[in-house]
Image (cartoon, rainbow, N blue to C red; front, side):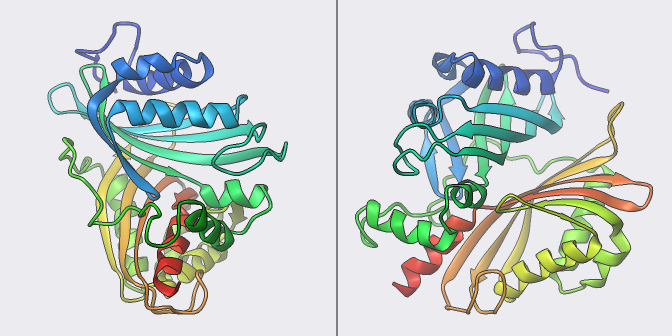
Length: 326
């Protein structure tokens, strides 16, 4: 059941319709100027690569992306949301993006390659306006499809941005900025179940994968990797945690929902912060301090967690490692 939106344009039938609709207006319909209206003047947009303040920065980034990928489409797969008219809303919007690398830009000279990759955006909204955002783009999938490995892309980016002393700094607790949204989601049991699973995994209770994941689960992992089966889930989470065995795992936001025609599902925003002190997905330990922002979506079926989407930016992790190692 959804609230009747108050303070939003009457053309939106509910909050997911608003999120899907403004995304279509901005990108597909090229109404980029509506960002002045839909995004607050002082919005804080956090991505693993950087922190941007204000809708002018969002507009500039949007135009740069469309210049490089003029046929980009954003296919909204799901909007998992929480909140109400009084407190405002938070959407966790999962998008499958398709695009052709047509022109020169952030990703170098045009290759003509066709890309498909996911984005998850957590957006806080009230009174018809987005005022706080966390955005994760699967950079690992993008650059691999362009023929580059994440670690090399991070090295090249540091050089392009003027070297280690001048390059942009990835998101960390030090570079983060406080925004206006103070919520932490809802207390729906499906969100709590997924949080419990992630916490147990991060506490090295890997046996929870066999008990909580459907044996035939479908998984989408960073780097555009599709995998199947609970053993693949074990491999993924083991590799990540093994890279940062002493890092602190924090759940920043969790949502659970049950909606008509949808399976029970959850959206969790989380982080790992600590030292790259183990062998795992990011190679030999370097001692680098790393902050990793992640967002995960999960769907449940009769045999447990049957679909999972996990996003973090591998290139931002590699950038922190390389800035430490030189």
